[in-house]
Length: 420
Ligand code: 3PG
Image 1: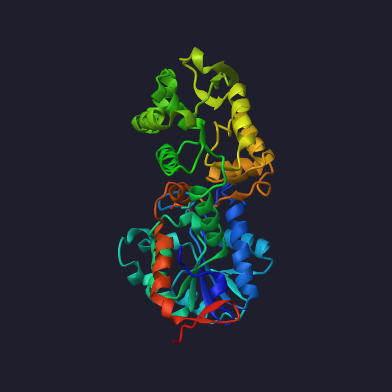
Image 2 (image 1 turned 90 degrees about the horizontal axis):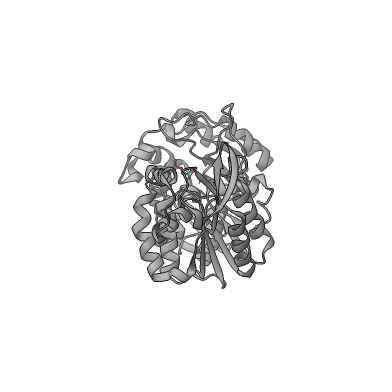
């Protein structure tokens, strides 16, 4: 992918707007929970500050109408801790206070602007995003725009696709690394390659399964979670009314025809649970798939399935995983998710995990730094793996093409000289 990177620019003395994705889970007291997004973006921000840039950070939190659409003062505190430098929170996005704060920055200073989603135009504007008020007000004040927000790259929001139209733009470290690793494992993985397809984002996950099999980028798919149940139903198993109704509620039943097609074409490559764990009066009870149906909810894979999948993982050279094996948040039903994560950590394969829930489970098990790559993305990760284009990445590619003649050598490989 031909976009410019942080090594291509000398940022000393320049005002750099960095779009990050600090969208974070909240605890019961409505406090943000520290997470890999904040930690990873801190490294990009620290590098820009250390290289002498005047750093203006932009981010979103929550969605309109949701209780987690909040100010970013707590995010600034968390960033300060990880950047190890004061990140000043500015409670304005592109008004006089924000603009004056940007103009007053010295080399190495860092500010965090207000939640971009407080501005309705951010998500509402569907075309000519570069003409939005935010871009018109801020673009004249910045030299470069850095997109580091891989986790939001599937959105064509103003702050993600508007600035690259009018300002020299490049990818931050987080975005660059995500695209490099995920491109490699989705297109040219070391073999044998295993995709552990779990979780409940069923339509997107089924697209990834299809894409990986059609592109011959995967030798085995091990299914669990709702994905595993959809394949079991597609094979003709009766999972029972309770579980089937859950599939209908989550619109997972709509994926049964696709699962049937995939089984007909690639049956030997698709592994399904051989036993499952049901919840009986809050307790975990395991049963073989051959004894289905059951009226109790199916919340995890069973021990025999865990052992079978573990053996497949032990043989793999590449493992891509996108969702938990069961309802790991519920006591007693974390076993499948935890055991598969443990197997992924212990196997020799290059392992990539993605999706917020799985990253959380890996964090609970203290495995975050022990697998090769944990993606910061949820929807963006799944869509990218499914071969879909990411509008924010396309915007960077277009920006690089537009500015290609302006690239001249500098002490950092290449340097885009804005004054030319
Ligand atoms: C995410 O959490 O997946 C990203 O921050 C995007 O958030 P969104 O789904 O609210 O656009």
